[in-house]
Length: 334
Image (tube, rainbow, N blue to C red; front, side, top):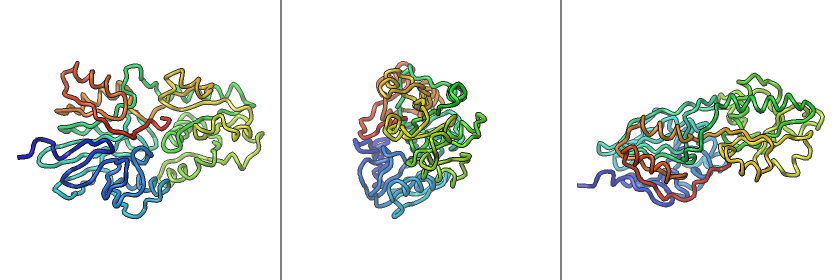
């Protein structure tokens, strides 16, 4: 008789589902991959078959040209994998299309979260707590110092700075998939309905979000407008463009960056950020620990982040846990 949970095997380059001969978020090309979301540390091209939500497949096709072998799975839909393993995709609340994957085999249930957050986000469905025997959770912000503020406070900081400098613009560095669209949608929710200007690298992903029903308001390309036309406006660009020559075309830009890492002052100073905006698409310490309590699994496996602190928290709260040694998972300027 097989040992409990011997069918799910963490390996350095991903999580292997042994009887199904497939992998979750593998960092190398495989014959069959189950993908949680479209960020480059979880999704890649070259797989024989890629199983993901329709939105994630659209993102992957845009970024990696992965249409061949794409198998869409809707939220709440269960598919049967080889070897008698069932897989169900459940909202993770991270970015558009992001999903936890519930695996069921031989009466045992395992949830792989991928990346997730518990805060409301107008660009994607919210995280759903799912009971299981083994809970495989991320820990990107797995230190008690990380307590993300309400996003409405960060939007107010941004808009107040803009109002105080009507002849300038606020240049917001935000990751092109997820963060940029969330910042734009939250600005709209905060009452900012003026045109928002985009670096050219942001346009296609923003259009994809709109095609999937996410309203972003009027968006304009920086390249199509003069410096004077952009005074008093908000410009969104990749973090790499914040201090690039490209920004010289903007009117007295006030540099901002939207990232959970802006909680760390040194990170803001390193990037010459004048206005740090603590906005994250990952769970903070309180969300991580609350989620572990609510899922109430027999065992918690902790990965790609600050595993040691969360592992210690589990031990102090009499919860079985182990840290996984997966490689290739980065924060991607969250």
